[in-house]
Every structure is written in structure tokens, then in C-alpha cells.
Length: 427
Ligand code: ZN
Ligand code: ZN
View 1 (tube, rainbow, N blue to C red):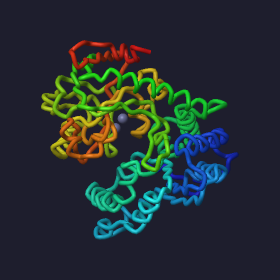
View 2 (view 1 turned 90 degrees about the horizontal axis):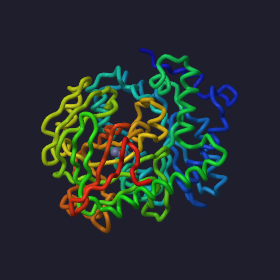
View 3 (view 1 turned 30 degrees about the vertical axis):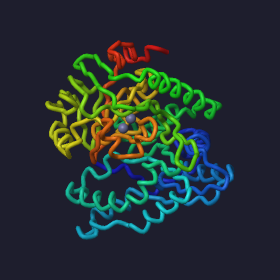
View 4 (view 1 turned 135 degrees about the horizontal axis):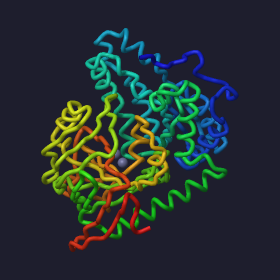
């Protein structure tokens, strides 16, 4: 299969883009003002592919218009990445540019904001030798730690937005021509990112108010567990002691409230690693490491998956849950109404940022320490004692649909409707 990479045509002038370039101005505005909430004088590091330059240039301009300090951009290119997998020695793959990640980490720890533009080709490495991909992936993720830790620990404000890259668009719309595919993905990204209206900033304020109301309601209820029923699903999911529901905006340790994911539709928290029982059937396929896994059905006993199958990609799924001790247990539970714009699009994006926001989901593996009340999240032992799971994986998969009902079970055992036919029951 081809790479769909029009290398020389990657950076099209505005008038040749197969979509309305004004939407990129609005997306840049949302990224800087809502996503990052960039502060006057604050420095910014932008990362993204060369193909996304029409958006990256606008983000840089928007940053300076909002009185940014210094904006530095680090560009990547799929073709450049492939040259390494195709020609580098195995020894080369065991190394990574540590110096760059150290410098980025230093900047983030010194109050520099971080903005990632994603336009990823989900199957870029699909034809490469899996052993070489794994080798390079391992050295890269080890080297990237100094740059990733300040982000996962929310030391600074950060944000991810997407650009409709051609290879990604062809994956989502394989039957369309290049231009039609990019145009269709662009339309989906702009509408789901809420920039296809005259006042995207107001639209995001309203959306955040909705997410805040949902998480506050769930926090007030302080449920002991959630009971899911749908075709193929009868699952009781215990929540961690002292869990807190989160969603949308988040305040980083530098005191700046940012909205890390554009788009975002979920409110989410930490399940209890030992209190999940029953069966659950996935409602959408999962894309993991370039492989499609469909028809997942699992049975939990005391938190742990004891039976698992899938119609497609079963081998990969079984390997995944054997990654480590915590890979058979849950680390996240998230509620997303069936009417969310991503779900309504009916598309599979092959991109977690989009697909996980389509529907109610659960994640196997590592929990989020920020989803706890008080100081629990600051102490790794307290997180484990409260029921937080730990693992080297965190893989989200969708279980929501228009046929899903969820009851909340209170600490006293009373049942309160949370969702009916995939929609919030209390709203
Ligand atoms: Zn999630
Ligand atoms: Zn997740």
C-alpha cells in the first residue's frame, strides 16, 4: 500500500487547501486561548509535522498576538522518520536524541507551555519490521521521559490539537480521492473541535460548563460503584476510594487552567482495581499499534480479566492484557453521551484523542493520580491503597452505545439512574 505522501505538495498555499483556511485561524485561536490559556510573556514549544505548517504558522502568530514570550517550533516529517527505519543500523535504533528531550523538559519545568499538533498517519510504521519498531520505540520512550514527565505530571499548561493530514485522512476515508478525504477529515475535525461557528471561544465556555456540571453531579453522588447493562454487558464497576471525577479544563502546577485535549467530551475517574465484576462487550473497534481489534468481550472477577476474546485481532488483544500484572485491570472509567459529536459522526478516526471521546469507555492499565480527592494523588502508596491500578499500559476501549444503561450504586446500596439509552439521565 502507498504512503499517500505528496512530499513536494505537503505545504499547500492557503488557496489550494481543500478546505476553508479560515477554520485554521479559529483552531489556532482555540488552541492558544482555550487549549493552552497562554499567559503574557510565557514561552511556548510547538511540535508537529511539516504537513501541518498552515496551522502551526497560525498558532505561532496567535501566540505572539497574545503576548507570548518566545515561540520555538520543532518540526517532524513522516518521510524523514521512515528513512531511519529503512536504513539505520540496529545499534542506531537503540539510541535517541536525549539532549533534545532534556532541553524540552528543562523548558517545561521552567514554565514553558507545550502545544502538540497531531496529524499522525496511524499506520506509518505498519510495513516496517516489528522488532525494529519495538527497538526504536523503547529507546525513544526512555529518552523522552524528561520531556514527558512534566506533561503527565501537569507541571505546565499543555494542549493537543489536530490537523487534517493526508495519510490520516486516507485511513479514515479510504474510498475518497486525496482532496475529498482531506476535506472530509477537515470538516470532522473543525466541527468536533467546535470551531465551525462564529464564536468558538463562547462555544468552548458553554461546553466546559456542561462538563463541569456533570463532574460536579458525579462527585456529589460519590457512588460506590456503577452498574452497566447493554447487549452483551452486565458489569459492576467499583470506584476507587476517594475518587474524583474530572473533565475538560485542568489547572496545572504553574497555576494556569488549560484544556489539554481539543476535542474532549468525557468526564472520567479511577475505578477500584479489585472491585470490577461481570461481562462487558466493546461497542466499537480498538486500534492498537496499527492493528484493528474488534468484537472484544471480557469477563472480570474481582477486578481482573479472567476470560477474554475478540472477533478480530484476538492475538494482539491477549498479548496486550498479558503485558504486566496491571494490564488485566482497569485504570480509567469515562462517561460520554451517545449524542456526542464524535459519536454522531459515525467515523472511526484511528486516533485515540478522537475515538475515546466518541463514547463511554474504560481503560486497561495505569490510572490517573489526579482523579482523587485531596492529597491522595500525591502519594503513590495512597493511590494503590485507595484502589488505583498501576501498569505500563493505558489502553482505552469503547463500551458506550444508544443501548447502554448505567445505574449508580450509592455507598448505602441505593440505585440512581446515571445514563439511559446512552444519555445522561439527570440532565
Ligand atoms: Zn478517557
Ligand atoms: Zn484514557
